[in-house]
Length: 164
Image 1 (tube, rainbow, N blue to C red):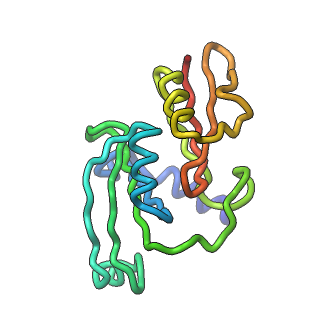
Image 2: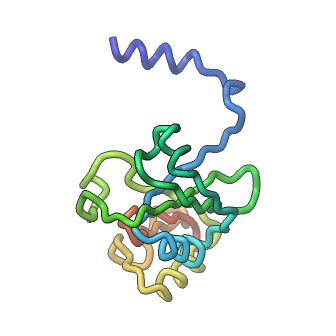
């Protein structure tokens, strides 16, 4: 029965249902300044804007029952075609251990960023003293494409894929 509902839902959706093909991902971080620094200086994202959601509005929306939201929006490029990476912090520690592998927890575990030249990213990662989790600076995927796996300050996995 569940499979039938999924199949029906999949065929009912049409591309004109969405106002935009983009989506935003909200990421709760331990230290907002440290994470913004990582994503702008190591990954190379662009800071687009900051905004606040009051405690009352966050409660009304069902996002929080006691916290105001301070949100920093980042994108890979400052354009309407780029997805939003929305960082926010509540100054609290996570309730789960930092993951060593993507199978250590459920839910969103990693993002993939495809790049034009991987060497630029490798150099920034090395300058920031971030560990390469794939065992070396890059791993060949064949056809001139290479793979890098790192974690952000809160342990979210980031795959960076592209030619050297």
